[in-house]
Length: 269
Image (cartoon, rainbow, N blue to C red; front, side, top):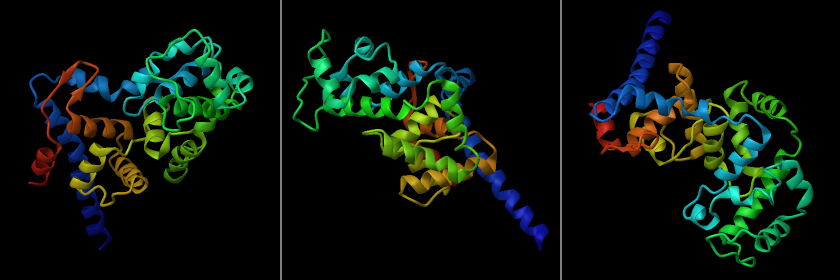
């Protein structure tokens, strides 16, 4: 009986690996898509990892704009460099007592952003962004070096349950991030051990039976467990499934007419 069970489990794992392999094959079936293009996207996280605390702080600030229309209101954040002390998170945390102090400094400074600055509107992109900047600076202020921050992150990577706690922590500490955005930041800038439960990942994972949930928290757990079973980095699975859903090879400036529903139909037969 144990032998039969083992063979059955092995067969299921082989089938699950084929989900990932067939997703790659589906993308490579488009004439304009090459193996090199696909690998560039799968390994992008290696080129994005910050190499200093200033780069880490700036990466957080870039990600804090990741909502519809906000980049158009904020503009190039390099223009905030002087007010943010060259993206020194400790000086920012010490200088500005709250988000309003930062808002006033920006409004009275030399930078004239493309979006309106309306202080008494909680939905204003600049109000949201200033709150995010201050919360990020305060969160990072206990870390003087990138090594100490990386040690902090490594403490969460010991198992699947502790890994799940890190995006939950960021969602609580950083204004406006939320669980999915925290996952996205971690996978793109910190570690390939994370996935972002977005519309493409969620739809494909449900379509293939990797998860049955509509809850981002549970989908994160289910897809993470799937990645462990097939021994593929979560970032690679996330990126391949996302490319199947979006067709957007943004690093190469190529967009293909992919269809996640068509891909799922092919897999399910």
